[in-house]
Length: 497
Image 1 (cartoon, rainbow, N blue to C red):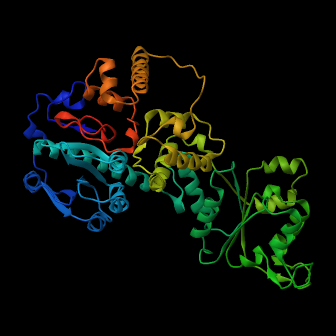
Image 2: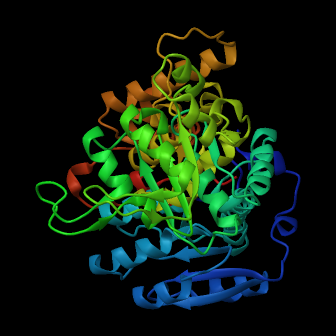
Image 3: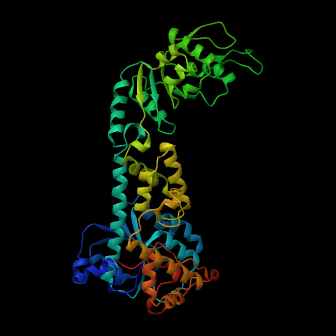
């Protein structure tokens, strides 16, 4: 985003405000926080911004900037990189990556900007402005940046409010029913069976039951019956005495005994071998265990919660699972809904994962494109919530822009034929023409704009509209600003408004 002058550019949002006086746009608003990072702050600018309602805090060193922005709420930020050395950039990057602060980069016309600074501006700043520029207009741009940061903060609060039982997220009817069932079954001590596809969050449900039960102060012990070799499962469950087998050098308590006074969660119970099923059934009947190699019975007080993605009813009919054990385990039954049946919860979960992990990215990720949200809603999600977390985290790291796209998420549908409107066809042709011109001219903006028959400023605006960035490296040299205060090519963001 680039600001040169207060005149609105054709096609920008500010063009719709031609009849609005600038004073009405920048009317003072009390309580607006502004953080300024600069070696030599522009005092006349700061004084004018104070009269326009900004509560200003200034930091002249990278260390002071870190202290100033730590834990900050919604605010605008103004940063002048002039005078800062390369050793300051890691600390400044930490300040600029604060999600609740909308940053504007400012510089004097003709100032030289190196590649590292250009990368910081491109990845973390909402806008780039060059002086001289009317102070009221700078206040206007700062207001935009603060507003965008506030929107992001409000969204994050909304997603946090959607967190239900023990980190489980969802507002759909199926999840509300699940939360209600959890509260009911937690009050009893009967065995619970959780059915659901892989990746739906069955262990979270089991933990929520435990935490709401009278056993919450006891241990919660989980064991994946499908992940342990069959010949070792018995010793894992029941423990063993010293000398019970080669390598048993000392007594060891099993998982059942370790869960005494609490809850034992048997995940993937459908994969348990028949011989282990018989031993588990006997424990459930007499509530006592015998360690391997021992002949003493040890009473154990434990509640059993089990889960599997296998069709346990079908396994019983096929003889792969004991019917008597099935009835012992399935006193109470809970069904975990698949992600594809949870509607708008997909949006909530995706944004929650983004908010939690967006610091993994080297740039400031602010959300998803509308096409990415549509793609996630249409996708079947065979891996459920686990797959969604995986795709969003990978997209955060690999994304090339501030909004995650279907391509970033790996949800593009090659060959899918959709009706193409005339507007979309024009946009596609326009983007292709710009890309080709940039490639032919080695990403030299002036030459590409001349070839296309448009101004340099118009090309900047169109590049932003089509999600294109100026990737010319210029041989790693510093790039001087163009005449009339034009910003350096790689630092430019978009037109004001």
